[in-house]
Length: 492
Image (cartoon, rainbow, N blue to C red; front, side, top):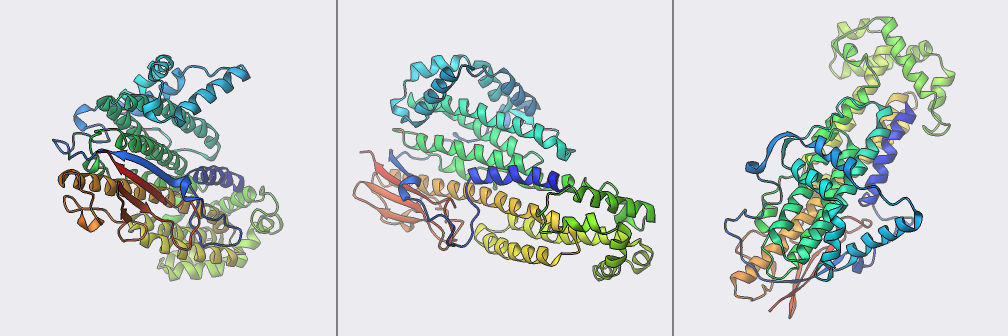
């Protein structure tokens, strides 16, 4: 069991790490904040007014463009039909270098004819992505995943990231040629694909979807930086909030966790037989005893050295007392086998912490951070005190992953708010015949969003040739918390 839990948790933490660090108070072993040059985007912009109609450039496919069908099938076909990567090590490295070089080249300098010839071999893949993003549903059929299925899920979601890399290259080529209609369609495909992946039923899918959505933000920056590019303020304002709904993954994770205890539903309905309760607890302990020494700070020895009956006998009275305090009927608790009481106590304690974390997804981001810190402290304390509660101790291994999922979503939402603020300034400049507003308060044509991390306006400074717009590092926190600087020059 512990291996299964870790098999799920480790990929989550690794994916979250590539998407940014978990915020935590600065400490001696925490890396210092990076050089601002690493999170600065320099843009030359044109002052373009709002499009007509206002939602002409929506970033998700319009409902009128959708057709019946399951998008997941098409996305998987795209993975299958992608051209085989060169097997020769030298040619493989050459192709890696080619794609990396094109990714780093400014869009206006891209060799678009060469890229178009390269993408010809990916035409079937790109067609599948385009069609799939415009399907009415997306069902990855991961609702009933078991722990052993994780190894099959990872290549699938990683394949989606790889196909998006090709789509991203196509979008950059279109932006280089100022083909805004084509580039918009590619961005719609990319953002919708990210949303489809992220709204799967596992936290891994959610994190990959967020990473894919963040990658498409780079194409938005390049769009804004092209001469006379249409303004995207209202396009971003109309996006779903949050962009990727986390409840699909969070609820799916609950089903996944509780799948380890198939008798749980019967136990929650009322007392079960001594045999069912003891067998369930014994199977749990047997799985737990497979943990590597030290994984649970010694708790794995509980299963190896203490008999199930003795465990239930020792813990049962206390567990029953806690269940009564929770409001369970005394007539049920009195006749309940001790093993059942021990298991239910652990599950209910876990649900307390889990729901406490999940509720943070519905809070304003700046308030959720403080709550998550409090929950983290309480979870660590509860685990330290749970020397006789191995089940709960195992479940606590998942809590850091849930926090990282929240932080990944928050970073994306912060970047969206920053781009909306940038486009609001661009609208104001167009409205004022090229005059650069002295402050964000001077932007009156549309509402300027606040920094959701700090609940106050983004930092803004007008310059002689443009302006600087900043989402600053969070005071007292480490790096990769959505900090970003836009240094903007106005084309005249």
